Image 1 (tube, rainbow, N blue to C red):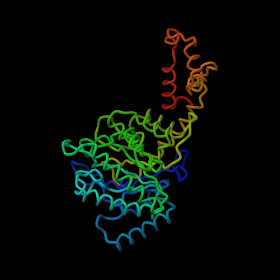
Image 2: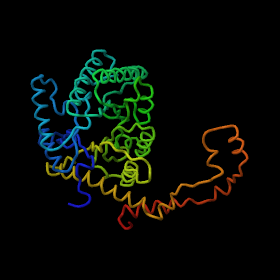
Image 3: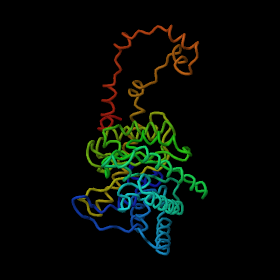
Length: 391
């Protein structure tokens, strides 16, 4: 054991579908034997994880009877208790079954929308029974290939109706549960509605109960379209809507790869951990740190647990590096907030008097334009911390 060995106080979680991924892909079948949910709980606990998350059908097979459901839940609860594990988040599978081939909440067919609502309410009940406080919605089939099939405004309105309905259901049941919406630009649909975290944040502002709903950004989903995940997370944190987060890695422009956290673009992974941990001085994120990724298809079961431990270790290593980076005197000098006693009071809270003073301030754009900012030096300092030759 060393300083980077994960433990439950780190708040690391995995989904049953992540470490339980058997290696299937569109071009080939499983390369690993599927594992029982109770066994996954045991092994994750041994790896130092804090909790395990699930879709409804990760635990309860589609179409199981009430008696089968209760038996499975009872056994799973026993495994959680025996291994000191929790279920911080749950979600619904609204994408695998053929009934959802053209969406769930946004489907043109009211029978499909009704089934999706009923399935989600049942899954919310399951999540709450297992102790979940966060419920994630990923609209994997909420999109199109043939855009002429519906007015996109209808899809937005139907999704809003579903979210308002489910918020009321949670309130009526008196559940202590918050919703987190997960964006993705495409795959498995050609285009998915609400493709980015920014789209989701605006959508939330149109809901009947926006206070109950936040976002669950995922590294891969923002990176697929070439956007900065760090900026998306920062926007969510700035408006107090980061309810949950999915950590993984992704090469820009590729299919959704769900790679081990930090295995691609270490710079962005570092900056993300720095933001989440608040080492620069901002308020940190204090929720679960969920790894929504899976081991390479090349791996056997031993490789799966190497993947899980590696995901958590990388986060802890980057956390330690972020602390050292932001404590570095040279770094602190370069990023120190600039103060101007005369101008600072004029830059917020408009009044006519402030506007007049601002117009009269002596500001030389030519001089300001010539001033170097030393960002090359700052970036090199960051690289040296990452490469282990500084701090």
